[in-house]
Image 1 (cartoon, helix red, strand yellow):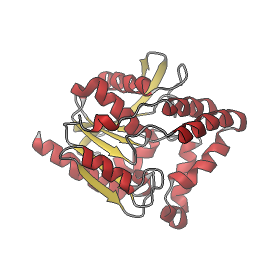
Image 2 (tube, rainbow, N blue to C red; image 1 turned 60 degrees about the horizontal axis):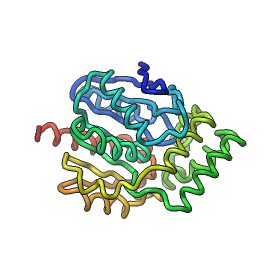
Image 3 (cartoon, rainbow, N blue to C red; image 1 turned 60 degrees about the vertical axis):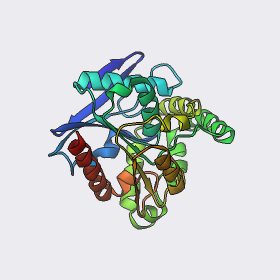
Length: 266
């Protein structure tokens, strides 16, 4: 399905039946990132799975792709899908978007799962690197960028033992365009510091990390967990930044447990 959101067309798919859950994929993937997890939970939940603007089948709109634009996109997707107060799950940039969504539309949030992400804004050095990569990808193309990112996104254990998962992740990311990658890099470089937002979160919240994640390591997950009252934390063994894709069975199990606890409280 496609829904117009300001200057972009946002693609999303709906799978399963039951309580609504919105899944936000990491950069530079698309909704297919979630399919290995979703197929294990279809009988109990209704998953709304968008492609972030500039990725997959969603258009770019006017650049940069600021977090404010992504948050509004998610509001439009929820309206179009007819879901009022779902559980939101975000990986990496998906987490950045959820912080912005919470600040703007907290009345629409039933619960939150922040996976392999961080609250802090980019450092000056990280911001410089993003801006440089946004230029380079338009000069050299997405393949060069994606091949450089793969060792950072897929954990060492997975790279060593599961080349099939690495290959599939690369195929998913290779759908990306140079313009889309650049637009999102520019938007992430300008994202605000969400650290102060952590103390304001008052819905059931789960933080997920991976032992092999060098982008957002477990101590980063622990800091956020401590800052959100009554939140939960889970660390998946032998998994990197794409933990949900690398270990879909383990991820589905912990997500099932969290969603069941949210339903019970509700």
